[in-house]
Image 1: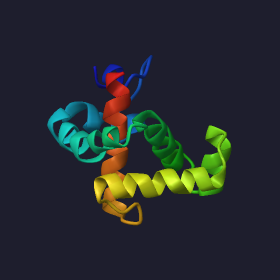
Image 2: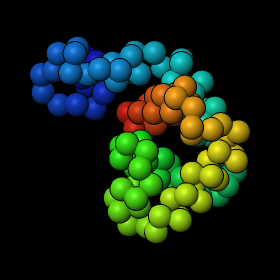
Image 3: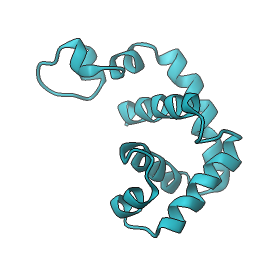
Image 4: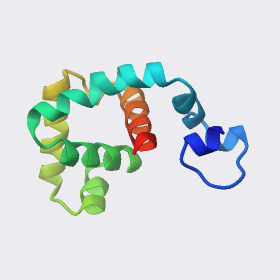
Length: 113
């Protein structure tokens, strides 16, 4: 059941799911984090671009150059979007706790798609 909730197919053990199992099983925490980090992005009018950039940024180890390459935009566009996230949420992407909570919110959002 947990693997399905994590949108994975086939047999998986709990170790292979990592934190995704916690995201899937604790929707209340995920919902709070989604409201904290993702809802404010709609105020900027380009939530989809910001979310795609944030997903890529985390997947690329928080490297701007790699993120830009992955999503086919200029590095300055990535920097602008990251700054826009910080402006809209009041959160700093330099803080480990924010990065973890943002990842959690993005994972929950992806599971619900």
